Length: 303
Image (cartoon, rainbow, N blue to C red; front, side):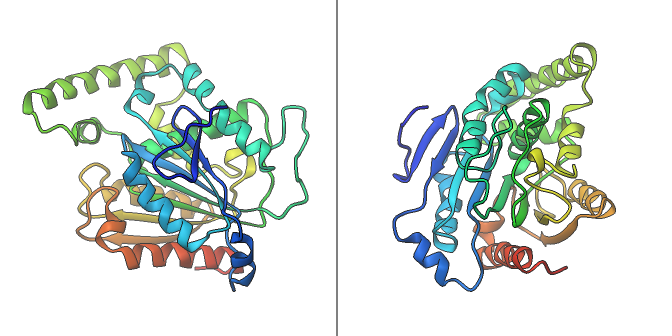
């Protein structure tokens, strides 16, 4: 486990693209004075290729809202999509170890740390990149037959996801930060190659279902992340009609599937904000919805 410090001095690197931030001294006193019990853990899955300063804008809001929470941050890089599944699973090992050390996950021997401590969990995924990391963690824990603690309170926020995974959206996601038209064309060709490679790997080598279909299923699994989230978990979809990478119609298909599966769902459909830019466009609405979600989770109230 490394100790490299990132731009926010509170975050420390656990491994490749994974960071932890423990609450500051005195934060527990602030939490005890709050009328709404805060999360004890906030697990954040960033969008693909997100620069650290951009992700930290969200973690800093969480610092203000819930200063006593431990934050675990998982980044998503484009290389995730052309790296072998075995390697991606191995890269998540420090995150699994951190969850175990914090008492949210049992060891492979079935042992717990701080099993009796009250747990309250908030999970926040951004775009397909974040939800793909979520899905991978879910599959890793399932393959290891690991169990998570059943938290007293849990909530799931899905920002700009999930999409079905069409090539048109992938083109935009991979080329969004590239202004050169020639390079954008090369990127599109590369994405086509990745799509063909991924399809052949999934169907002819590993025998798994299509990757994005698998991700969408995992988000609606009853007892996802080893049981950290379940049917009692409140969830919030934040998405926009102006999102060119993840069409709102595809998000709403997943919303319907979640409702049909019995999940308690709240939605915030923005009009003009771009992909993963809803908080920047309408911060009060965005963070107000997140706080309302958490309060509903604590109170156990239906939407």
